Length: 367
Image (cartoon, rainbow, N blue to C red):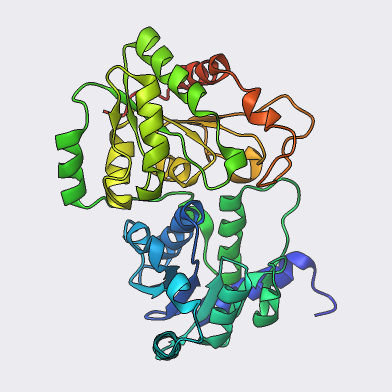
Protein backbone atom coordinates (compact mmCIF):
# COMPACT_ATOMS: atom_id res chain seq x y z
CA UNK A 1 0.00 0.00 0.00
CA UNK A 2 2.95 2.36 0.56
CA UNK A 3 3.46 2.71 -3.20
CA UNK A 4 -0.18 3.43 -4.05
CA UNK A 5 -1.34 6.99 -4.66
CA UNK A 6 -4.67 8.28 -3.33
CA UNK A 7 -6.51 7.58 -6.60
CA UNK A 8 -5.40 3.95 -6.57
CA UNK A 9 -6.58 3.55 -2.98
CA UNK A 10 -10.01 4.97 -3.88
CA UNK A 11 -10.26 2.66 -6.90
CA UNK A 12 -9.39 -0.40 -4.82
CA UNK A 13 -11.89 0.68 -2.16
CA UNK A 14 -14.71 1.09 -4.68
CA UNK A 15 -13.88 -2.22 -6.35
CA UNK A 16 -14.01 -3.94 -2.97
CA UNK A 17 -17.28 -2.29 -1.97
CA UNK A 18 -18.81 -3.16 -5.35
CA UNK A 19 -17.83 -6.76 -4.75
CA UNK A 20 -19.86 -6.96 -1.53
CA UNK A 21 -22.94 -5.31 -3.06
CA UNK A 22 -23.72 -8.21 -5.33
CA UNK A 23 -26.95 -9.39 -6.92
CA UNK A 24 -29.74 -9.66 -4.39
CA UNK A 25 -27.83 -7.79 -1.69
CA UNK A 26 -29.69 -5.47 0.67
CA UNK A 27 -28.70 -1.94 1.64
CA UNK A 28 -30.18 -0.11 4.62
CA UNK A 29 -30.60 3.67 4.38
CA UNK A 30 -31.15 5.59 7.61
CA UNK A 31 -32.75 8.99 7.08
CA UNK A 32 -35.44 9.87 9.60
CA UNK A 33 -36.29 13.53 8.97
CA UNK A 34 -37.04 16.30 8.09
CA UNK A 35 -39.06 16.93 4.95
CA UNK A 36 -36.35 18.51 2.82
CA UNK A 37 -33.73 16.01 3.97
CA UNK A 38 -36.02 13.10 3.11
CA UNK A 39 -36.49 14.53 -0.39
CA UNK A 40 -32.71 14.89 -0.69
CA UNK A 41 -32.44 11.15 -0.08
CA UNK A 42 -34.46 10.35 -3.22
CA UNK A 43 -31.56 10.96 -5.68
CA UNK A 44 -29.28 8.67 -3.66
CA UNK A 45 -31.75 5.79 -3.70
CA UNK A 46 -32.51 6.40 -7.37
CA UNK A 47 -28.82 6.35 -8.30
CA UNK A 48 -28.33 3.07 -6.46
CA UNK A 49 -31.27 1.45 -8.24
CA UNK A 50 -30.35 2.85 -11.65
CA UNK A 51 -26.82 1.51 -11.28
CA UNK A 52 -27.68 -1.74 -9.48
CA UNK A 53 -31.35 -2.62 -10.10
CA UNK A 54 -30.76 -6.05 -8.54
CA UNK A 55 -30.07 -4.52 -5.11
CA UNK A 56 -32.82 -4.27 -2.48
CA UNK A 57 -33.10 -1.06 -0.47
CA UNK A 58 -34.69 -0.75 2.95
CA UNK A 59 -35.15 2.72 4.43
CA UNK A 60 -35.62 3.64 8.10
CA UNK A 61 -37.67 6.84 8.04
CA UNK A 62 -39.57 8.80 10.67
CA UNK A 63 -43.24 7.84 10.73
CA UNK A 64 -44.19 11.49 10.18
CA UNK A 65 -42.48 11.28 6.78
CA UNK A 66 -43.54 7.77 5.78
CA UNK A 67 -46.05 9.02 3.20
CA UNK A 68 -43.37 11.30 1.75
CA UNK A 69 -40.86 8.45 1.43
CA UNK A 70 -43.54 6.43 -0.35
CA UNK A 71 -43.39 8.94 -3.21
CA UNK A 72 -40.04 7.43 -4.22
CA UNK A 73 -40.47 4.29 -6.35
CA UNK A 74 -37.02 2.98 -5.50
CA UNK A 75 -37.24 1.96 -1.83
CA UNK A 76 -38.21 -1.71 -1.54
CA UNK A 77 -39.02 -1.58 2.15
CA UNK A 78 -39.86 1.29 4.51
CA UNK A 79 -39.26 0.82 8.22
CA UNK A 80 -41.03 3.54 10.27
CA UNK A 81 -39.26 5.09 13.24
CA UNK A 82 -41.80 6.46 15.75
CA UNK A 83 -39.74 9.22 17.32
CA UNK A 84 -42.44 10.93 19.39
CA UNK A 85 -44.05 7.74 20.59
CA UNK A 86 -40.77 6.05 21.42
CA UNK A 87 -39.40 9.15 23.11
CA UNK A 88 -41.38 8.01 26.15
CA UNK A 89 -39.01 5.09 26.50
CA UNK A 90 -40.00 4.51 30.14
CA UNK A 91 -43.47 3.47 28.97
CA UNK A 92 -43.82 -0.35 28.82
CA UNK A 93 -45.64 -0.08 25.48
CA UNK A 94 -42.82 2.03 24.00
CA UNK A 95 -40.23 -0.44 25.29
CA UNK A 96 -42.04 -3.32 23.60
CA UNK A 97 -42.34 -1.42 20.31
CA UNK A 98 -38.67 -0.41 20.35
CA UNK A 99 -37.76 -4.04 20.98
CA UNK A 100 -39.81 -5.14 17.95
CA UNK A 101 -38.22 -2.37 15.86
CA UNK A 102 -34.72 -3.57 16.77
CA UNK A 103 -35.76 -7.15 16.05
CA UNK A 104 -36.98 -6.17 12.58
CA UNK A 105 -33.72 -4.35 11.87
CA UNK A 106 -31.74 -7.42 12.82
CA UNK A 107 -33.80 -9.87 10.77
CA UNK A 108 -31.47 -9.38 7.81
CA UNK A 109 -27.76 -9.08 7.19
CA UNK A 110 -27.19 -5.92 5.15
CA UNK A 111 -24.35 -5.57 2.67
CA UNK A 112 -24.03 -1.98 3.90
CA UNK A 113 -25.82 0.49 6.16
CA UNK A 114 -25.75 4.17 5.16
CA UNK A 115 -26.63 6.81 7.75
CA UNK A 116 -27.55 10.04 5.98
CA UNK A 117 -28.93 11.65 9.15
CA UNK A 118 -25.76 11.91 11.19
CA UNK A 119 -27.28 12.25 14.67
CA UNK A 120 -27.15 10.07 17.78
CA UNK A 121 -30.42 8.23 17.14
CA UNK A 122 -29.59 7.46 13.51
CA UNK A 123 -26.08 6.42 14.52
CA UNK A 124 -27.54 4.08 17.12
CA UNK A 125 -29.87 2.56 14.49
CA UNK A 126 -26.85 2.06 12.25
CA UNK A 127 -25.02 0.41 15.11
CA UNK A 128 -27.88 -1.97 15.89
CA UNK A 129 -28.33 -3.13 12.27
CA UNK A 130 -26.46 -6.23 11.15
CA UNK A 131 -23.75 -5.31 8.64
CA UNK A 132 -19.98 -5.37 8.31
CA UNK A 133 -20.04 -2.01 6.54
CA UNK A 134 -21.56 0.91 8.44
CA UNK A 135 -21.16 4.19 6.61
CA UNK A 136 -21.77 7.74 7.78
CA UNK A 137 -20.42 11.26 7.72
CA UNK A 138 -17.12 11.83 9.49
CA UNK A 139 -18.50 15.23 10.56
CA UNK A 140 -21.80 13.87 11.94
CA UNK A 141 -22.98 15.23 15.30
CA UNK A 142 -23.89 13.89 18.73
CA UNK A 143 -21.28 11.13 18.61
CA UNK A 144 -22.87 9.36 15.63
CA UNK A 145 -19.47 8.59 14.00
CA UNK A 146 -18.75 6.21 16.87
CA UNK A 147 -21.14 3.77 15.18
CA UNK A 148 -19.45 3.89 11.74
CA UNK A 149 -16.51 1.89 10.43
CA UNK A 150 -16.43 3.76 7.11
CA UNK A 151 -16.60 7.56 7.28
CA UNK A 152 -17.51 9.93 4.47
CA UNK A 153 -14.96 12.74 4.34
CA UNK A 154 -16.04 16.29 5.09
CA UNK A 155 -16.79 18.38 1.98
CA UNK A 156 -14.73 21.39 1.03
CA UNK A 157 -16.27 24.82 0.61
CA UNK A 158 -20.00 25.48 0.47
CA UNK A 159 -21.37 22.13 -0.67
CA UNK A 160 -25.10 21.64 -1.17
CA UNK A 161 -26.79 18.95 0.92
CA UNK A 162 -27.66 16.90 -2.17
CA UNK A 163 -24.06 16.88 -3.34
CA UNK A 164 -22.97 15.78 0.14
CA UNK A 165 -25.48 12.95 0.09
CA UNK A 166 -24.46 11.86 -3.41
CA UNK A 167 -20.85 11.66 -2.22
CA UNK A 168 -21.92 8.66 -0.14
CA UNK A 169 -22.36 6.61 -3.32
CA UNK A 170 -18.60 6.32 -3.65
CA UNK A 171 -18.46 4.60 -0.28
CA UNK A 172 -21.09 2.13 -1.43
CA UNK A 173 -19.14 1.35 -4.57
CA UNK A 174 -22.00 2.73 -6.66
CA UNK A 175 -21.47 4.83 -9.77
CA UNK A 176 -23.15 8.23 -9.52
CA UNK A 177 -23.46 8.42 -13.32
CA UNK A 178 -27.26 8.23 -13.03
CA UNK A 179 -27.10 11.88 -12.00
CA UNK A 180 -29.51 13.87 -9.86
CA UNK A 181 -33.07 12.67 -10.33
CA UNK A 182 -36.15 11.97 -8.20
CA UNK A 183 -38.85 10.29 -10.30
CA UNK A 184 -41.61 11.22 -7.86
CA UNK A 185 -44.58 8.83 -8.11
CA UNK A 186 -47.71 10.70 -7.04
CA UNK A 187 -50.64 8.39 -6.18
CA UNK A 188 -53.44 8.59 -8.72
CA UNK A 189 -56.00 9.36 -6.00
CA UNK A 190 -54.07 12.52 -5.08
CA UNK A 191 -53.80 13.60 -8.70
CA UNK A 192 -57.57 13.16 -9.10
CA UNK A 193 -58.21 15.11 -5.90
CA UNK A 194 -56.03 17.99 -7.10
CA UNK A 195 -57.96 18.18 -10.36
CA UNK A 196 -61.18 18.81 -8.41
CA UNK A 197 -59.86 21.63 -6.19
CA UNK A 198 -57.22 23.48 -8.23
CA UNK A 199 -57.97 26.37 -10.61
CA UNK A 200 -58.41 25.29 -14.20
CA UNK A 201 -56.29 28.23 -15.38
CA UNK A 202 -52.54 28.61 -14.60
CA UNK A 203 -51.71 29.36 -10.97
CA UNK A 204 -48.78 29.79 -8.61
CA UNK A 205 -48.39 28.04 -5.27
CA UNK A 206 -47.47 30.01 -2.15
CA UNK A 207 -45.99 28.49 0.99
CA UNK A 208 -45.76 31.13 3.76
CA UNK A 209 -44.58 28.60 6.33
CA UNK A 210 -41.25 27.42 7.76
CA UNK A 211 -40.26 25.55 10.90
CA UNK A 212 -38.04 28.36 12.18
CA UNK A 213 -39.62 31.72 12.96
CA UNK A 214 -36.55 33.45 11.53
CA UNK A 215 -37.08 31.78 8.13
CA UNK A 216 -40.54 33.27 7.66
CA UNK A 217 -40.95 36.21 5.31
CA UNK A 218 -43.69 38.48 6.74
CA UNK A 219 -47.22 37.34 5.94
CA UNK A 220 -48.12 40.87 4.83
CA UNK A 221 -45.40 40.74 2.18
CA UNK A 222 -46.65 37.37 0.91
CA UNK A 223 -50.12 38.92 0.65
CA UNK A 224 -48.73 41.89 -1.28
CA UNK A 225 -46.84 39.47 -3.55
CA UNK A 226 -50.02 37.53 -4.33
CA UNK A 227 -51.85 40.74 -5.23
CA UNK A 228 -48.93 41.88 -7.39
CA UNK A 229 -48.81 38.56 -9.27
CA UNK A 230 -52.53 38.71 -9.97
CA UNK A 231 -52.33 42.36 -11.03
CA UNK A 232 -49.31 42.06 -13.33
CA UNK A 233 -49.62 38.48 -14.57
CA UNK A 234 -53.31 37.70 -14.17
CA UNK A 235 -52.37 34.53 -12.28
CA UNK A 236 -54.15 33.23 -9.18
CA UNK A 237 -52.45 31.84 -6.09
CA UNK A 238 -52.97 28.59 -4.21
CA UNK A 239 -51.83 28.61 -0.59
CA UNK A 240 -50.32 25.41 0.81
CA UNK A 241 -49.52 24.30 4.34
CA UNK A 242 -49.77 21.47 6.81
CA UNK A 243 -52.44 20.90 9.43
CA UNK A 244 -50.50 22.92 12.00
CA UNK A 245 -50.12 25.81 9.57
CA UNK A 246 -53.79 26.46 8.86
CA UNK A 247 -54.03 29.59 11.02
CA UNK A 248 -51.18 31.40 9.25
CA UNK A 249 -52.56 30.40 5.87
CA UNK A 250 -56.00 31.71 6.76
CA UNK A 251 -54.49 35.06 7.73
CA UNK A 252 -52.64 35.19 4.42
CA UNK A 253 -55.78 34.34 2.43
CA UNK A 254 -57.71 37.07 4.24
CA UNK A 255 -55.01 39.68 3.59
CA UNK A 256 -54.48 38.68 -0.05
CA UNK A 257 -58.18 38.66 -0.96
CA UNK A 258 -59.35 38.15 -4.53
CA UNK A 259 -59.27 34.72 -6.08
CA UNK A 260 -56.91 33.02 -3.66
CA UNK A 261 -57.46 29.30 -3.08
CA UNK A 262 -56.42 28.21 0.40
CA UNK A 263 -55.63 24.48 0.53
CA UNK A 264 -53.61 24.47 3.75
CA UNK A 265 -54.42 21.54 5.99
CA UNK A 266 -56.35 19.62 3.32
CA UNK A 267 -54.07 16.62 2.95
CA UNK A 268 -50.70 14.96 3.19
CA UNK A 269 -47.55 14.81 1.09
CA UNK A 270 -49.23 13.15 -1.87
CA UNK A 271 -51.76 15.95 -2.21
CA UNK A 272 -49.06 18.58 -1.73
CA UNK A 273 -47.04 16.96 -4.52
CA UNK A 274 -50.09 16.96 -6.78
CA UNK A 275 -50.56 20.70 -6.16
CA UNK A 276 -46.92 21.58 -6.70
CA UNK A 277 -46.67 19.51 -9.87
CA UNK A 278 -49.46 21.57 -11.45
CA UNK A 279 -48.18 24.97 -10.27
CA UNK A 280 -46.37 27.41 -12.57
CA UNK A 281 -44.08 28.35 -9.70
CA UNK A 282 -43.76 27.97 -5.94
CA UNK A 283 -43.08 31.09 -3.87
CA UNK A 284 -41.80 29.98 -0.50
CA UNK A 285 -39.58 30.37 2.51
CA UNK A 286 -36.65 27.99 3.06
CA UNK A 287 -38.72 24.89 3.78
CA UNK A 288 -39.48 21.28 2.91
CA UNK A 289 -42.08 22.10 0.21
CA UNK A 290 -39.36 24.06 -1.60
CA UNK A 291 -37.34 20.86 -2.07
CA UNK A 292 -40.39 18.83 -3.08
CA UNK A 293 -41.22 21.40 -5.76
CA UNK A 294 -37.66 21.15 -7.11
CA UNK A 295 -37.98 17.36 -7.17
CA UNK A 296 -41.14 17.71 -9.26
CA UNK A 297 -39.49 20.09 -11.73
CA UNK A 298 -41.58 23.07 -10.64
CA UNK A 299 -39.78 26.45 -10.71
CA UNK A 300 -39.15 27.91 -7.25
CA UNK A 301 -38.55 31.40 -5.93
CA UNK A 302 -37.43 31.10 -2.30
CA UNK A 303 -36.82 33.81 0.28
CA UNK A 304 -33.72 33.22 2.41
CA UNK A 305 -32.56 35.08 5.51
CA UNK A 306 -30.79 33.21 8.31
CA UNK A 307 -29.80 30.22 6.16
CA UNK A 308 -27.47 29.79 3.21
CA UNK A 309 -29.00 28.80 -0.15
CA UNK A 310 -25.64 27.47 -1.30
CA UNK A 311 -26.05 24.74 1.36
CA UNK A 312 -29.79 24.11 1.41
CA UNK A 313 -31.35 26.22 -1.32
CA UNK A 314 -33.43 25.07 -4.29
CA UNK A 315 -31.16 22.76 -6.28
CA UNK A 316 -30.65 23.26 -9.98
CA UNK A 317 -31.04 26.07 -12.48
CA UNK A 318 -34.83 26.31 -12.66
CA UNK A 319 -35.13 28.32 -9.45
CA UNK A 320 -33.95 31.41 -7.60
CA UNK A 321 -33.09 32.22 -3.99
CA UNK A 322 -33.67 35.79 -2.86
CA UNK A 323 -31.16 36.81 -0.19
CA UNK A 324 -30.86 39.98 1.92
CA UNK A 325 -28.08 42.54 1.71
CA UNK A 326 -27.35 42.60 5.43
CA UNK A 327 -24.10 41.82 7.20
CA UNK A 328 -25.63 39.43 9.76
CA UNK A 329 -26.98 36.91 7.22
CA UNK A 330 -26.70 34.00 7.17
CA UNK A 331 -26.59 33.63 10.95
CA UNK A 332 -28.27 30.16 11.19
CA UNK A 333 -30.20 31.29 14.28
CA UNK A 334 -33.73 30.18 15.13
CA UNK A 335 -34.43 33.38 17.06
CA UNK A 336 -33.42 36.96 16.37
CA UNK A 337 -32.71 39.83 18.73
CA UNK A 338 -32.64 42.58 16.09
CA UNK A 339 -36.10 42.32 14.60
CA UNK A 340 -35.34 39.88 11.77
CA UNK A 341 -33.74 42.59 9.67
CA UNK A 342 -32.74 40.06 7.01
CA UNK A 343 -36.26 38.93 6.15
CA UNK A 344 -37.84 42.36 6.55
CA UNK A 345 -35.29 43.89 4.17
CA UNK A 346 -36.41 41.70 1.25
CA UNK A 347 -39.07 43.47 -0.81
CA UNK A 348 -41.88 42.20 -3.01
CA UNK A 349 -40.05 43.76 -5.96
CA UNK A 350 -37.00 41.66 -5.10
CA UNK A 351 -39.09 38.50 -5.30
CA UNK A 352 -40.89 39.56 -8.48
CA UNK A 353 -37.57 40.39 -10.15
CA UNK A 354 -36.21 36.97 -9.18
CA UNK A 355 -39.28 35.33 -10.77
CA UNK A 356 -38.75 37.29 -13.98
CA UNK A 357 -35.20 35.91 -14.16
CA UNK A 358 -36.50 32.38 -13.66
CA UNK A 359 -39.04 32.90 -16.44
CA UNK A 360 -36.31 34.24 -18.71
CA UNK A 361 -34.26 31.11 -18.11
CA UNK A 362 -37.20 28.98 -19.18
CA UNK A 363 -38.97 28.35 -15.87
CA UNK A 364 -42.37 28.67 -17.46
CA UNK A 365 -45.67 27.00 -16.68
CA UNK A 366 -45.76 23.27 -16.01
CA UNK A 367 -49.14 22.56 -17.53
